[in-house]
Length: 183
Image 1 (cartoon, rainbow, N blue to C red):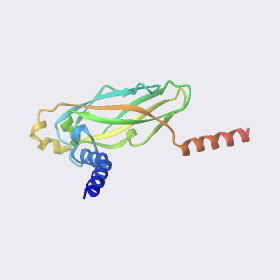
Image 2: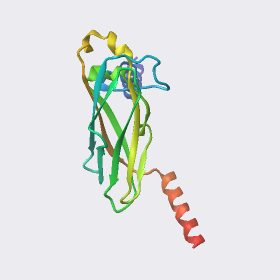
Image 3: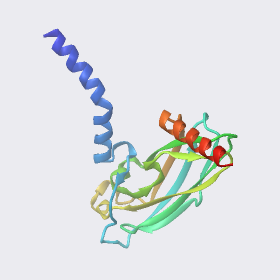
Image 4: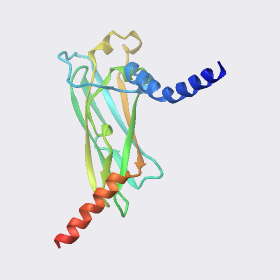
């Protein structure tokens, strides 16, 4: 009986992180945004200002900032914003972005159609890249009495460094070998 209990606890501890992530994505808990495949058909007259925030881990030699401070859009309207990343490193670097919105309760209504945060980003030494995010605020926000006076949402990203996996290193070495042989 004790062995079954211990095995169950170990199994639950491994499942806790993915289950919590799914819970946050479904409910918007903790400011987790939603992912949408298409924009809504309804656009309301209510407007909300979306402010943009950008941060970079201390361990990363990137400059990262929003291209615009804010956008005012109608609820249900699709918007496109850009963040600019500049590698200040002398070598190629990879990063991944985490994100959230505040107030946290708005997360369940903030939908991203396309985002650089869905994939790993690789910048060569000194490279500058504009990274798009396409989003909308779900018209269902109008039915939430807790958010009826909400006028501003902040979308925040933080980039963290990533180590390339062996496939990336092997591919880079192969490309370098091919380039050198062709010279």
